[in-house]
Length: 546
Image (cartoon, rainbow, N blue to C red; front, side):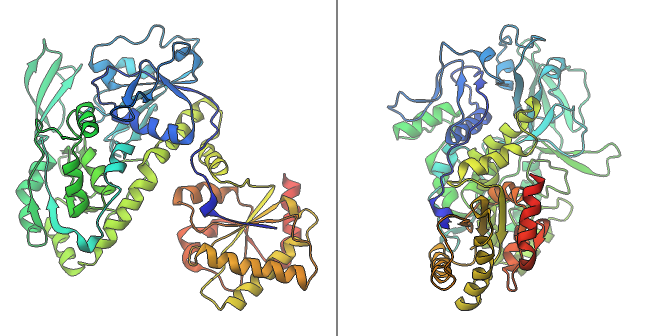
């Protein structure tokens, strides 16, 4: 019987059946969506290539995130990715890109500004997937469109990793937009098309670009109605980093250049020291009857930077205005979403519950990093594209990640139990002893893994109790404990790992005293319950099904 804690687990490798090829548009284009995916792929150990070297890993380094290899082209890879930047810069598609005999999956990353349905001209119908930012739940998108987001790249994580505790932050609201989102430029669009919420004003660049005035930009709405209400709670900070003021540090200067002058360490320092940040972006658009509004073009770097820095993040109410992203945040838990029809209600609640700010600061950062930092972003990407190739079933990539990221392997029979470690140590030990004794006496004990939740006790203390149990079984019961089962303490898994792991469990061994909070948080009621007295029969039935 071996006891393992999740502190010893590695989370940086993932066996993935395939290579990925990225078509970068040109050296100066900021391919944020590609970078976030590639950051995660690299951390997972998934091989990928590009049409040229790009995105240096250090100022003096000759190492790149994206690497060109003359021996590899897109025909050699099962998955090929390009973005809207490729088409914006008038580049032709790679030769025979949509060849009917192709065996690769094509992916189009689309973070273009403006209404989320506008960029679907006929060429894009050929892509297997379009990963589109700024989607909403109002439109019926084509079948190949998947909601996507800007997310949090390693660049953002690195500059927001050292954050202040909430009570040490300045009680101010950062409002430092560099553009107003009141004007929109669209390329490759039929200028005669009437677009709800936009008014055409001009043509530029030989009519290739059309300029529009935005009727209801969210930044203007917040400026005119919200900030005057919230200023009694937060000091308002409108200071910005100028486009032409570059960082002095060489590496930060390189990132400033590569990101279109978006990267600024002084900005990240202010974020990590401020209590809150306004992240309104895009616009709202009236529905057909003009009675309700929905969000368009809502996604932005500022939203994700604010969350990563642990700021209380202000935006519109995502549920009310139809915002759609792969994993939705919860209003008043992960961010504060205001109702544009009743902005005062937000202020009133903050006056009544000032303590909620710190909880949102912590929960919002955890939610964003857990779901939209590079590794979960790359996993989501792999899950989507693999489903097309049938190399994995939908959801299988996540399950595969769990088995690859843990230092142990799940066995033929995988069970879990949720002890209430707050009970007296002797009581907990006796309950676990009965469970483990039942497993040790099973003829196939080497094929059994028992996961033990220790979310409300340290791994060290839980390990001591389990070691004492093992010693008692060895000395008093004279049971052999060297040949299984394997006991795994799993209190430090992320929510994503739990979500992927739970479907692979055959059952939950019921105890008299259980950690009800952990069970509720992990939705353990979805795991079949096994009474201790029926454990041998249940294990036999699991093996029969196999």
